[in-house]
Length: 434
Ligand code: COA
Image (cartoon, rainbow, N blue to C red; front, side, top):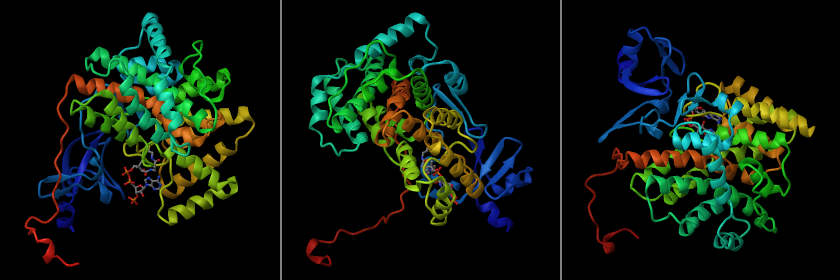
């Protein structure tokens, strides 16, 4: 028993930073307390001990599946404490920003590191307004794409295409990259809204220069100026989604940039990565699930059946958070407020039942994607656009990380632990089995 324990190697997780490895036997001797999946040592230090968390030794070194807990870059943009459910942008608590900031100001904070004064904020507002009008060729591209195309595929293609029309495409200075970051932020909203109109057989709506970023997006989407409550709720949702440390799409963007490829290429990588159902694609899957459940009374049984079939429930679980995702706290509140305003709390109430069932049956809390669906639905955003809407916010975090990567770059090139054969012999075609 003692020998078996000693043979396992675990990560020691200190509030989001993995600083060393330790055997379970050593940790227990040091006063660690073991539960089914955790081994806690000296208060906040915990060792996660599920099978997937185990670090495997391959012929070329240690393998940590999914790079869990691997520290892959230094960053001063976003801090997450997954044990305490804490999240900061540039040192500012996300709860504080959700309560007091707006999307434009938060974007400035991510890009520059400090909150802007009134002059700098007004300047950014002007730059974003100037970036909203898409080149005619990009609108032509959107008109040419088959209407059944998934909105994330359209966004990915459009970003790539936009590079050809960007006046700073050939320049890679920090100033040029900042201008591209601002332009892309404006263009993401315009592409998403324009595609919604075009794919439904209509024409894009020209941006309204009197409106801020959040209101203008809803205006370009629905053709009506949103009321204050909807505009504010959407603005908060944009703040909450703007960055999240080295999430998969941000990491993909940084890997691309680290080859010294350009910003549009890196952002294209990020869009393709966000699309996946284990990442940004989960918010659409949540709404599809709520639709499929249909009635609140069916929600608990549905979850039991899915879990019994060992299926994942979209909008739950997180690689970093072991407690409530602080973003979900705001989105839950917004889901209730907007549902109440619309006189229809069905999605909110169904979500509450699912959340309670997941906590009771699996002990897993919801993530940012769970309530964002019902919040967006209450604003008239169709579920097919949920992931592009996520991208419309995350573009600020991606580009902030790209600026950081370019400022202190080294190519990101890990190694693989080879598990294949080493002495395979070439067999001529006529000697191989048919
Ligand atoms: N529903 C049911 N069980 C879940 C779950 C979910 N959404 N998320 C995690 N689990 C369970 C796994 O089945 C696994 O259980 P096991 O140890 O008994 O096998 C355990 O929790 C660990 O899950 P794992 O998939 O290894 O975690 P991960 O860190 O590799 O993946 C996610 C993290 C986010 C990809 C994962 O939780 C997930 O797929 N969630 C659903 C998709 C989603 O909402 N994505 C958006 C993330 S912001």
